[in-house]
Each structure stands twice: as structure tokens, then as C-alpha cells.
Length: 152
Image (tube, rainbow, N blue to C red; front, side, top):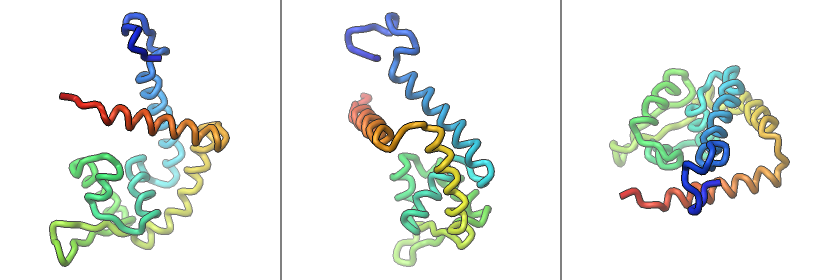
């Protein structure tokens, strides 16, 4: 594991936390790609749909904030979801600068089909609920610690 007492020359890749997290991310991407293929979504599209299934509608800004992405990344994904007939966009009457995203009926129906994705990924993770929650807490703490570091 990365420690202040070791240099990178002393650490093999298999002992570097950053590399292990990177490899885990790649493995997750492969599992999700396989699970999402029958549903017809990419992983970023799936994340946006998950937010909308939970909340019903969100502004573009809220989606960006929740995913930690900028509008330049989210807007093309939303455009594709709109073309697919899964979401619709509406400008707020009170503030036309704000755009809200709503599920269409087709988008709501897709939630049922997506349950197989969650099952597939849960099985692939291969951890009981307690271990998965502990791992999630550790990863969330790691993310918070790294996010707090100033990169001047």
C-alpha cells in the first residue's frame, strides 16, 4: 500500500493503492458494459437514468453536481437519451437558463429492465452486503480524503 515511508521505486504496481483502484474501475466498466448491453445504455447513461428513477426529474446542473461531471460531458449524454426517447428537456418558465430533465414513459419502463443490471453487478462483486457496505465506506472515505487535497 502507498505509505509515506516507501518510494515509488520500492512499490510494485500490485502494491499501489492508486493502481488497484484503477484496475477495479476497469473491471467495473467491463462488468457494466456486459450487463448494460441488453438494456441499450452506456454506463454514463445508466448513471443519469438511475438519478432520474430515484428523483423523477433534475436540473442539468443537479445532474452534473451529483455525478461530479461538467456540463460539457453531461449535455451530449442527455442529448442521446432524448433522441432515444428516454428523457425530455424543459426550460423553466421562471428562469430560462435552467433546464430540467424528466423521464418519459419509455424511460420509466426501462427501470424494470435495468433491475437485471443491478443483479448482474451484485453477483459479480461477490461480497455479502456487510462487506460491500464496508468497502463502499472505505472508498467513500478515500475519495473524500483525496478530494480535500489542494492541487496548487
